[in-house]
Image (tube, rainbow, N blue to C red; front, side, top):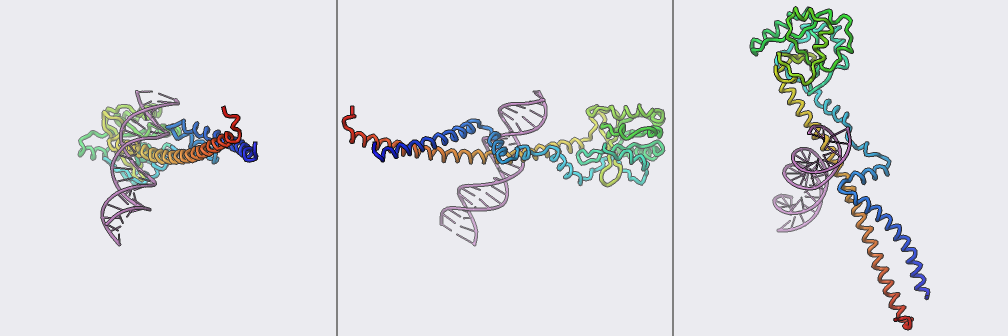
Amino acid sequence: MDNNSSNNLLQSSFESQEDTDNEKRAALQREQLSRRPSYRKILDELASESGTGTADTKPDKLNLVASLNNSQNTQVSQPAVITINNSTNLVPPHQQQILAGPQTSNVGGLFHTPVIVTSDVMSVLASTLTNSSNTSGVQPTVVALPQHFFQGSNSDQLSQPAATIMSFNNSQADLQNLSATQVLSNVIQAPRTALITTPYYNIHRPPNNQVVMTQGIPGGNHQTPQQLADEASKKREIRLMKNREAARHCRVKKKEYLKCLEERVQILEGQNKKLIDELKALKEFYTQHKKDYPEHNI
DNA sequence: GGAAATTCCCGTCAACCGGG
DNA sequence: CCCGGTTGACGGGAATTTCC
């Protein structure tokens, strides 16, 4: 064997080692690529290599909702029926304090702070409702709690979720006779999906610091059409926002995937070139060998 | 320089799929 | 079965390139 041939063999030996590495790498990439159509794996792997999980890039549901809520906080709800200024002292200051706790929620841009109307201001409220109902043709439903309700009650009880809707068909006298527990059970045990068959009012406290009563629809659920529409549009906004984020995410992954494919093409092209060169060298070696050693020919 | 064509990016919709 | 995530398809607008 001449020097040239041994050098070639030595080089081939190194190259074959390099090729093995390349093949391993290529095999790894093939494996990755065979996991299509989802790009999740690649992105996850890339993310883990760079030390940041995909969790970082996932939209935070809470933040999403929070940001949406924040964006809607500036919208002041339109009172559907009655607006009563705080100056009418519907709720004494100390009771407002009780009610202005964590139970305040913002749904569809409305601040659903439960407002309890005490018996000593019921006449004011009743007359307001009556006057209003004369034009709307709906008999007023008075929302009221007797004074003794507040004695011994605590804010935890009041923070029950369904307290944003209060539906009563009781007369003032009936209400005066209700115990605190009975009233509470009327208020807080009404399921959110319950059908309300009597006229009722939703009571909100929007940011303009007015007590706003919106008339509900008997026979429907406890939400007004406006509220339903708001909720639907809010849901849609959230869905669109999430999908927007998801599409962005998906495109990033797709780009990474394409980059990976391009790298793989380069690797394969390199391998192909090496194989062609190797084949050429072997052919030359074989031809030369045939010339040098004709007696070996069969 | 400006119109037309092409490319890129983004948002949305709809279909599909997996998990609960 | 419903819900939420994923992704291909589509359309619109902005940016870039090409052509006259």
